[in-house]
Amino acid sequence: SLHDALPIYVILIDTPGFSDTHVSDTEILRRIAEWMKDSYDDGVLLSGIIYLYSINDVRMDGPSLKNLRMMRKLCGTDSLKNVVLVTTMWEKVDKSQGLKRELELRVVFWKEMIDDGCTVARIMTETGDEARELVTSLLKNKPLSTKLQEELRSGKTLVQTEAGTEIRAEIVKLVEKLRKDHEADIADLRLAQQSRKNYLAII
Image 1 (cartoon, one colour):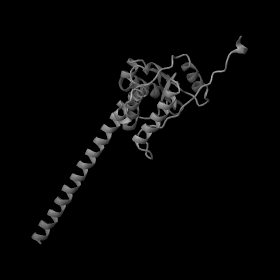
Image 2 (tube, helix red, strand yellow; image 1 turned 135 degrees about the vertical axis):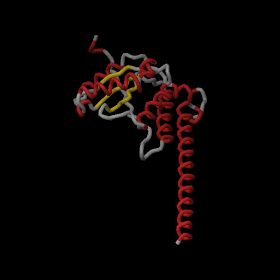
Image 3 (tube, one colour; image 1 turned 90 degrees about the horizontal axis):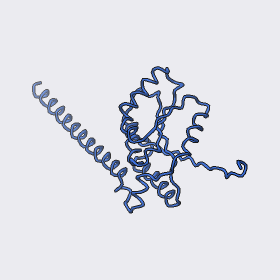
Image 4 (cartoon, one colour; image 1 turned 60 degrees about the vertical axis):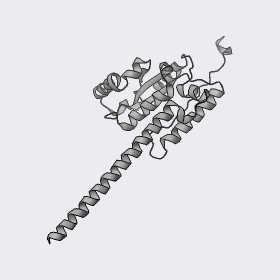
């Protein structure tokens, strides 16, 4: 009977986002990977992954794109059917403007993930009811492992995983940018010094 049914326990994990100003992407990935590996070793799979995006954001910027890209690397294609891309903060925008931004997300930034099985949802109020309904709806999913869990279980180190490779590539690009910026600054300084010498010579 209904009264004899066992209670359902739901575990919600709030992960940090990448591009955090206080914690490096490498450390964020390490924390996520540590939890994912421990939970996988304990036989715990994920019924759903919720990606939250504020519809109040005027455009999809660099950090948002990085979070989306990293989530795809963490999940892998096979588990995207359990991923929900959720827009929030609808109470802070005009609804017509929000719908326009949501359409852009669907047909541009999220299109590939939607094609691979992700679904899209909205949380339009601050009451918490829609959020609870969303979590409840994920309980019907078949729990799946993520790409990162499978890679770690196969014996790969964190830096050898797709997510680790992505972060390493980001670090290489950052180092290269800093090097070019430094060289440009040195060139500007030398040009300024040369101009000053020429000016003094004329005087």
